Amino acid sequence: MSQDTLKLLVSQAAADYVLAHTPAGAVIGIGTGSTVNYFIDVLAERKVFGSRFSGAVSSSNASTSRLQMHGIEVFELNQIETLPVYIDGADEINPHGQMIKGGGGALTREKIIAMVAKTFICIADVSKRVDTLGHFALPVEVMPIARSALSRKLLALGGMPVLRTTSNSTPYLTDNGNQIIDVQHLNITDPLTLEAEINSWPGVVTVGLFAKRPANLCLLASAAGIETIQ
Ligand code: 5RP
Image (cartoon, rainbow, N blue to C red):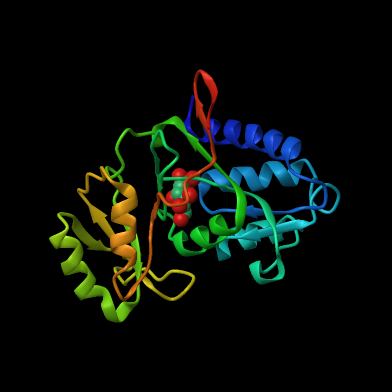
């Protein structure tokens, strides 16, 4: 079974779950990435917006465009007081629901929406499941002025910091106008402490470790079916 098929299957399962567990009229949180793109398309196909849900808040310009392309209303987070559910993918997820996120560059807005949401549902194919986080390079969104100083600090932590670039070899810029350092070769045995440590450094906007606010529920697709981890 291809990875794309798994992404579609997990998106269909997530749509079933969200429809069964979310109050009518709610605004729902939508993340970023290729798995979430399938999820957006599944919800659009089922025509749930406008009827069952009022609209969405989105964690990136890319997801906002995709939602709007389907005619789905996208609200600013500042307009919303409660968000029953946030659905997003992950680059890695461990058995505690802690994740590395930010492969798509949207980690800051993802973390903000995850903070507001009552329930965070992670959707992924089984290749994202790990025992210990860190095989996937840890994204850290930084203010450009702090890039070199923070790279040295990340190196001192034992990682290999690499500035994310575009295909033109220019620094990749997030939707917030910041840069991303991807930290390779970390073996993250204490995600909570590492998240707090990196977040405490001036110039760090967000570290892509979601340990303090893990997923409440994870739907993982494999050839054997959908596994639910709570
Ligand atoms: C974007 C993210 C994504 O959730 C993560 O990169 C997974 O993406 P995909 O579903 O394409 O594998 O954190 O910032």
